[in-house]
Amino acid sequence: MTAGAGRPDGHQREPGGFETLAIHAGQEPDPRTGAVVPPIYQVSTYAQDGVGGLRAGYDYSRSGNPTRTALEECLAALEGGPRALAFASGMAAEDCLLRTICAPGDHVLIPHDAYGGTYRLFDKVLARWQLSYRPAHLADTGAVRRALADRPARAVWVETPTNPLLSVVDIAAVAHACREAGALLVVDNTFASPYLQNPLALGADAVVHSTTKYLGGHSDVVGGAVVVADPELGERLAFSQNATGGVAAPFDAWLTLRGIRTLAVRMERHGVNAARVADMLSTHPAVTEVLYPGLPGHPGHEVAVKQMRGFGGMVAFRVRGGEEAAVAVCGRTRLFTLGESLGGVESLIEHPARMTHASVAGSPLEVPGDLIRLSVGIESGDDLIEDLRQALPH
Image 1: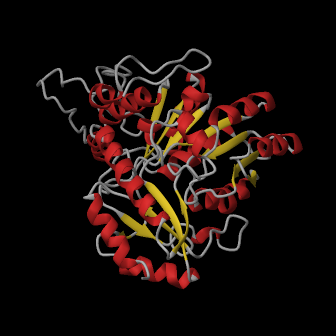
Image 2: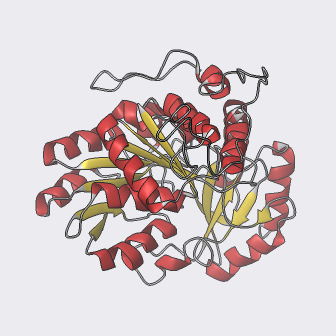
């Protein structure tokens, strides 16, 4: 894996291959002891050398913590941005970013198949703050342009691939439309991870992550992050983060860094297993549709080939027999664990309509009842396929 391409404004990821940056960016050996892993600074406050005499700029851990700084420097290097900020959760990151770039009365375009938690934030929380939103088919760049012409938007919020329908958005094309319309482009890069996709290099203004997922990778930490292309936006975001306080704790930041060190090798295995699972499901008589960008028949396949370096570990599919049949399949797997979240080393299965996306029921974003979402882990591919075969109707 080589370093990502430069942004249109000339900004590039710092030199070094991805795997090298994941292990070394922001993580120099401890200067006092030589420890090769950055220590956990489990501390709330710092001694000052006289009033205002801060050592390395640290005074209080809500405002800054060396372990969190190490994570933020690593994330910025991996996404090719000048500034990254680590948060207590992906939703904390989203909320802080939106309240920083938007004001009451602003308007935002969101995906017609957005993550349920993102929809809930817009519909139940930010709407009361007088921030309006409109779902749009963001995979159709023409639809994006028409929506922006119909009503100016402060931002366009993109997921690619989307959760859970795995739609693929042409980031570069939408970025061009946003620049023409004076809108900011935010890309949720959680499903792809920075190993497979770098939205800032394609023209996005900000990237958000639930670091809980592939970046952490072991289902043992909750966190979020924002990486920005503009240092001035980074300063504004840092002010908002400090003012509202939703920061990543030191141990959580350390666990996320630990996960990032193996991100490259994990994503390769996730992708290999997911491709095998998708191929098997595509020929199974109980399956009516498979949603995976790596399949040539996927409507976003060509765009995914162009802007991604692989297709990831998420697979969704629909089953014959409707919602009850889908729920039954979720209950019959033995190796795929029934649970929410994704991106861990273990494989997970869930029913979006009743679980992760229950909050969009009855809305324009409602997901099909016969849909099942898989987070394909790094176990034996043969074992995963056999587990799904025995769980599906024969």
